[in-house]
Length: 435
Image (cartoon, rainbow, N blue to C red; front, side, top):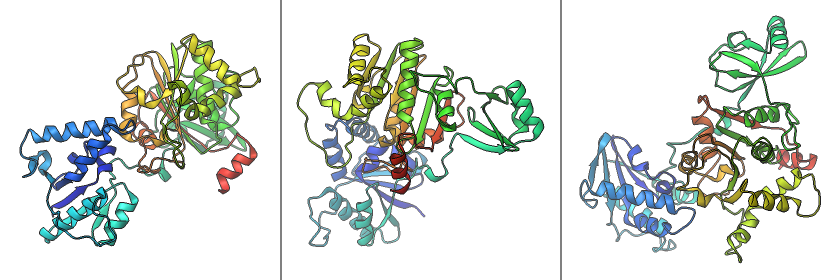
């Protein structure tokens, strides 16, 4: 049975091409959604997606009248709905709110189409609650959803025979079929156990074998790995052949510190890349503090303070504000750039080492935008904790970080590690576990 899907604004902002994913069904966008998208075009965090959405719908308009409906490919019927203004909502529901206008339109469509299933698609939890309480069918937009609880961790623990263990210990390599029974992800790690002994290696898909890690024990800007997962992360971060890396883990596991340390090491000391580029999405935790005074750099400082804290930790000079002084020195030499993620769109960054921190607050579309900015010989590292998301319309299953990790798991030039053990402090580790 063909269904009628009514799309909320946040669905189109999350995925401007969502309209084309409802194959063999009808898609309705209320006119109030179009009005809201127009307002969001001026918002620095949603402006790009809003403009893309407008262009997508305008392209559909060229095929026919949006008010009468347009037949699209894959048997999709699309329409912009302007009617049903007379539908009555409960008195306590303010009629001017966009959410309530969408609910009214959906009630009207349902009333006019009693033989069809009418569904509101929204990423807003409260909108789903309100719709359900009015007797409407509601759904989340799940086209790009990943099951975070089953996310690939980047490493495996396996028991191996005496012969296999001794072969790896002696030669530093072993055939994949001697360790794993199936074709594994490229650049995944194996912790091989035998009679209480443990040894680790990384899988090379091109050579069909597990090899000894080349960079697991290196010192990057004075930092060495403290546990197995950090060794795996270090091996990926220092390898020139790995171009996209996702580091997932709760607070205190060392994601950002390892990324910044290896970035500084390879840009400043080893000169493998021309510049270290560090960016974070500007999304506040809790209530926003509003507009900030000063220059662009002064405005960004509160958002970028975690980066300064990490460079502070890495600085040999432990005097006050050592991190800021190191940053200023490297910026003056053109080796480092710390800025808001807002400014990355439209750029091309060749031969750069890019770190995107707090990437769990990005949508899959924003992640795509960032990865497509990479020029020749550029390496991109995404770090984040999917359990700490500040964006109101994302969760552990729908954010761009987990989406990228899942989609790139079989790509030869990518690597992923889930870091589990906290190394910041005993207190931080306890808080992450118990709270």
